[in-house]
Image 1: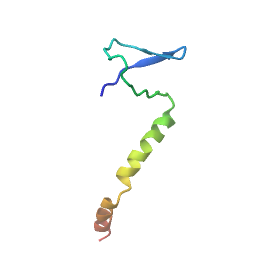
Image 2: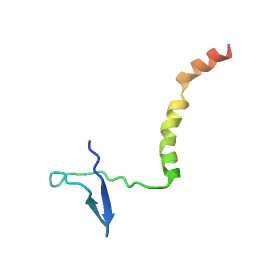
Image 3: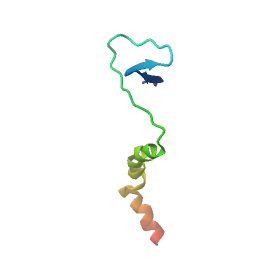
Image 4: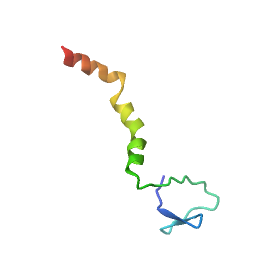
Length: 65
C-alpha cells in the first residue's frame, strides 16, 4: 500500500507527485482535515480497544492485593 498526496480542484483529484498507476486501478481516497477534534474522534476507538480490555483486569486485581 502506498500513500500519495493529492488535492481537490474543481471537483477533481489532482496528484501532487508523479506516480505510475495502471489504468483502471481502484484507489481509496481519505480526505484530511485540519479540525483537531476529528483526529481525537478517529483515534478514540483504537484507544478504547487498548485501554478497556479484559486482559488488563488481571493486573488490576494484582494491584488490589
